[in-house]
Length: 261
Image 1 (cartoon, helix red, strand yellow):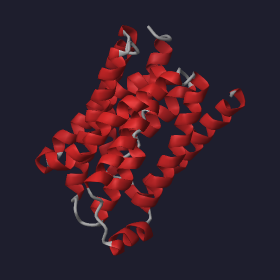
Image 2: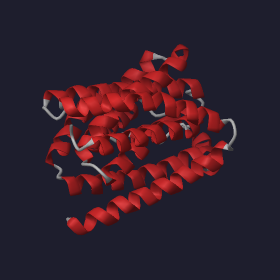
Image 3: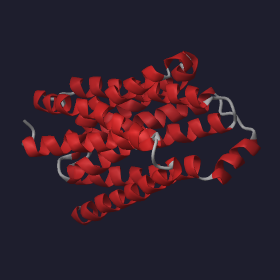
Image 4: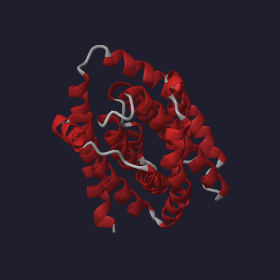
């Protein structure tokens, strides 16, 4: 196997924590997974394990809101994804381990800023509502394009779609259920596309798939834990805590990697 059983076990624990955070806060699966695993294993192998488990995680959530799914809302960003993902894979193939950790740390910082602004600050959502602006199909496809690039390169595709979704939701064009259905369908599609692309390029190996299968049950256990905790902890307080921890996580990745460049 890639690494040893200790590394495999630690990876499964990270997926458990990521799924629990996602179950409570509604975000963080990619950020937690790709923020922590590169601290004890290569970013490239971590991205494979995350990709497989992310397909399962998004499929599980999508199924719960499938009645709100509208393929027309999904297909617009996917059109950009089709172009963006191969570009991201090309970038991914040129990164060494240190550069990958720096890139992940940088995208984590961007994700924290965007999530904090769009999900936590009422002033931002109020401003979006006042602008009465609806992103057109070109903007939606562009969000998918950049999400594909980020997803292909560092396996953290969220920031562009979070901004796009924030406008659509705050403007009243998407309900919360529609946004959840669109996001999980999009990110699930992205991860399937990424997994297929990396399998084609030979980056997905049998040992890594075995590690991924070991981690898959943690998605369901973590989600159950997250839902249980959600019922007992104020959501907004927990979200701020997650953002703070992700900020520290990003700093650690950058601090440990930059001196090696």
